[in-house]
Image (cartoon, rainbow, N blue to C red; front, side):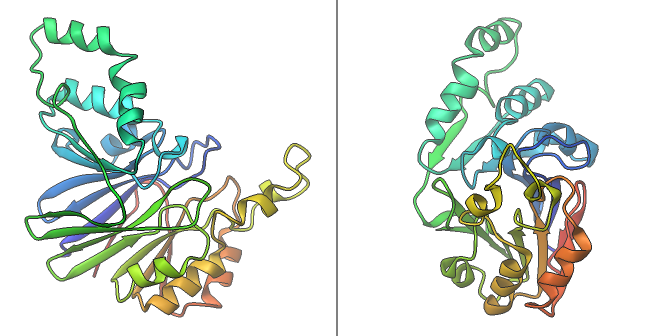
Length: 275
């Protein structure tokens, strides 16, 4: 049995979709459950996947764009109501401000009311928010989490999770990035953004006529994801962060031109492991 498993709660983009929620993943590492990003739809997908959401006591944020954070308040308030009693958040600079603006300020009276009903404050009043710089950001119980800055339109990190001889890397949102190659060196699994996969969103779009040219500076093509996986020497590559209508078979072909290892197209509620 693999010691690291990742279940996708969302594999889509900022554009709402019934098939693909915003970015989010549940990590099972040993006997711990952790959340990696928390975009819109995350809480519902966590429940759909059958996880005990009250056991998720760590949240890691790759960056603070809306499609990675929209469910922040929902997850915190909802799982606290379900009985969650602890939470630590790890995110880039600005995470404390996001915590205040999305949760503690707008829902201050709501939280006070629920406390007045007798709900224990643990898991809400004592949420620990940690802002990190690149490097080793977590080291407990045999698990290390290492972050490196990648190339996006806002400060963003990729993260590597190492535990019990297994390793999984998530790219965050990025185009091809040499520092990501180094972070992913020899990993079992690389989960990579491919928002630039072929999609109708880039064709005859009068509202955003130059969308592809703008986004390609901040997101990866399937070929770039394959190149990263090949250069890093990973065993398994998982493609995620698809725009609506992305052409999946064409994406696979473009990726296979660069990487001859196992390639998986992520879907919401899919689980991948390090085996």
